[in-house]
Length: 236
Image (tube, rainbow, N blue to C red; front, side, top):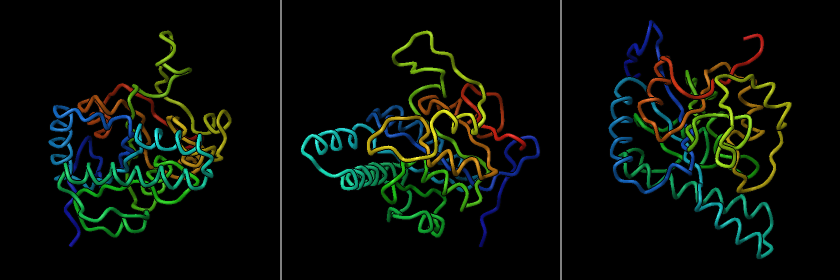
C-alpha cells in the first residue's frame, strides 16, 4: 500500500526527498547525529527519504595511498565505492533504516523502507551522480546536496575568506565550467560532471546546503527561504 503523502508547504505535495549526504559530514559528532536522526525520523513521517552517503576522508585516504602504490584508477574507484557503502551502513544503523545496503539505484527504489540509505554503485561517477539518478528514477521532488560548506561559491571558501556564495546558478553554466566527464576517484568537488549531466535533464528541484545546519536544510526541503544555492535550468 502506498504511504500517505502529507502536504509540507504552500500546497506543495512532497512524495520523496533524496539527500546526497557528503562524506565530509561523517564527523562522528554524537550531538549532531542525535539531531540528524530526529530530523530524518520526523521527515520520514511525511515523505519517503533516500540518503546517498559519500566516502569522505575514509575514501580519500584509501585512494591516496592506493594511488601512491600504483593501483589502477578503476580499482581505486571501487575502493572508494566500498568506503561509501561502509559509511552508508553506519548511517543506516544510526537511523534504524534498511538492513541491506542497495548496490544499485534500482535496488534502492525497490527497497520498502521509509528511509533508504545507500552508497556508491559503479565506477565512473560520484555519489552525487548516484543521488541525481536516484532522484530521477524514484520520482523525487527535490535533490538536496548536503556538504560541509554553505553552498556553491565563486572560489573555495576553505582557502579564500572573500569567497562569494551564489544564491542560485544555472546547471548549464556549471557544465560550461566543469564539463560532464568523470575525472578521477577521490576528487573532492561539490557536484561532479556526471551529476550535472543528469540534473540538466531532470525536472526536480536541486539545492546545495551546509548539511551541518539541519534547520536550514529542513527549510530548503520545505520550500522556505534558506541559505545555500539553488540549481536552476534554463527554460524551466
